[in-house]
Amino acid sequence: MFTKVPDLKISRVDGMRRNRFLLAGSLTLLAMFAAVPLQVQAEESVTLIRHSNKAADYYNAGDYGRAREEYRIAIGLSPKSVELYEGLYNAAMKNNEWDQVAFAIEKIFELDPKKQPALSYEYGQALFHLNKYDEAVPWLKKALASADLPSVAFVPKIKNIDIVPSTPYVPPPPPKEEPKEPEPPKEPERAPETYSLSYENAVKSECIVIAEFEGLDKTTEKEASWNHPPLAHYHITKILKGPPLNKALPLKYEFHDLVDTKKPDGWKFSQKLLPEQNSSWILFIEFAVPKRGMFETFQGSYGRQPATDDNLNNLYQLLDKYNMRNPNS
Amino acid sequence: MFSKVIRSAFSIGIAAVVAAAAAAPGLADTPAQKRENIHRCLLQIYLSQRKSEAGGEYLALLAAKPSDAQLHYDYGNFLLRGGNAGGSAAQYQAAIKYAPRNADYQIGLGNALMRTKNYKGAVAAYRRAVEIGGATGSQSPQQLLGVAQQYVQQQEAYENYKKQQAENQ
Image 1 (cartoon, one colour):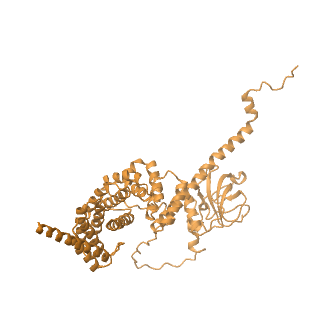
Image 2: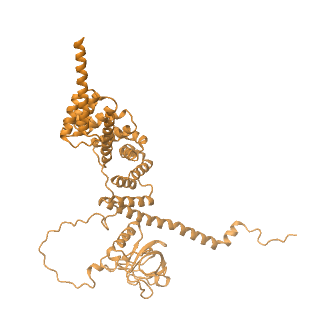
Image 3: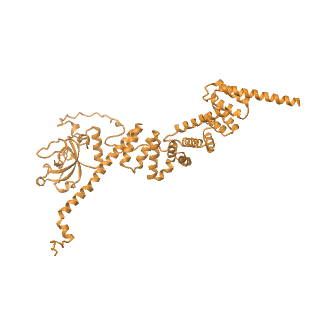
C-alpha cells in the first residue's frame, strides 16, 4: 500500500554531512553579522567623542545653547554616561533652562545615587524655577543641611587632544639659538612637508578607504621579498574619501615605508608578517589609479593603518578639518 | 484705603523677593550664597502658599544680611500684612536706618504708624516721603499725608472734646 521512501532512515548526522556547505555558508554569514556591531560600535564611539568634544568647545567658548545641543546628541549615543549628563545640566543651568537641568539631574541620580547630597541644591532650585514648589521644599531643606560642602566648578573634559587640539594651540618657547655651521643644502626629491610619515600628509591621498584584509595573491606570495611586495586582496567596507572604487581592492603590499627602506638584518618573509584575515584597516591610497593591476598606498606600509578607535578618530577629525570627507561616509 | 496701600506694598515686596531669587542661581556658589539662595527660594514658596514659615525665612536672611534695607522693608510689609504693626514699624525704621533717602520705606513706616494710631508720627514719615520724592507705590505720598493730617486733626478735636468734658464735670 505504501511505497518506501528512499533514504527514510537518514540520521541527523548524515543530514548535517550532506548539507555541510549550506551550514558552512550560514556560519560565515552569522560571523559576518556578528562582526558588524563591532565596527558600528567603533564608529559610534568616534562620533560620541566628536560630539562630546564639540560640546566642551562650545561650553568653554560660552555658547551654552550649542553645547547643550551637542550634549543631547552625545547622550543619545551614550545614554548611561554621568559625565555627559553633568555637562548637559551645567550648560542648561547657564541658560536657565530649568526643565533640562531637572532632567539631567534626575538622570544623574538614577545612574549614581551617591551624587544626591552634592546636587540637592541645584535640583531644588530647578524644581523651584519650574514652580514645583511642593517637590522643591524637601530638596532645598536637604541642600541647606549640606550647604557647607564646597561646590566644584564644572570643567568639561576634552578627549584625544593630541592630534587636533580643541584648546587653542600655544607654541612652545623657542629654543636658544646656538651658532652652527651651515650644512650644505640638499636637494629634496619632493617638498619635505609632503613625504613625512604623518596622518596630516596621509589624509591628502586621493582615496581613503576602510577595508578588510582577505589575503595575499597565491602567485605573487611565492616571490614575495623585501623589495618585491606581493599583491594583497582587500574588501572595501567604506570609502571615506575619493572615487567609488570596486569593493574588491588589489593592493601592493609593501613591507616597509618609503622613508626608511633599509632591510633589517635577518628579515625574511613569513605568514607572521601578515595581518589577521578579515581584520579592518584604513588604507591611504595616494593615487586612485592602479599600477600593474595594484593600487599603491601612501608611503608604502605607512599607508596601511589598523582601523582602531584612536586612528579612526584622528582620521575623522582631520577629514572634517580639511572638509575632505565624502558626503555619505 | 490703608489696606489698599498695604496690599500694594506687599505685592511690591513679593516681586522684589522673586527678582532676588531669580537672579541668584550660580554654578560655583559659596556656602553663604547657597544659603541665601535657598532661603530666598523657600521664602517665595512660603509667601505664595501663605505659610507662616515665611517669617522664619526672613529672619534667616536678615541674620545673614542685617544691613539689607530692602529685606527689612519686605519683612516689615510681611509683618504689617499679618497684623503685627509694631513689629513692622521696627523693620521699616531699620530699613530707613540703612537707606534714609528712600520714599517707599518712609511710606511703609507711615502706614505702620497709622495702624498703631500714632498719626503724628505717620504725618512726619509721609512728609519725609514727599520731600524725598520718587515713591513707586500706587498711592502718592501727598494723598497719604493729607489723610494722615485729617486723622491728626480729628484726634486733636476728639482730645479737646474729651478735655472740655472733663473740665465741665
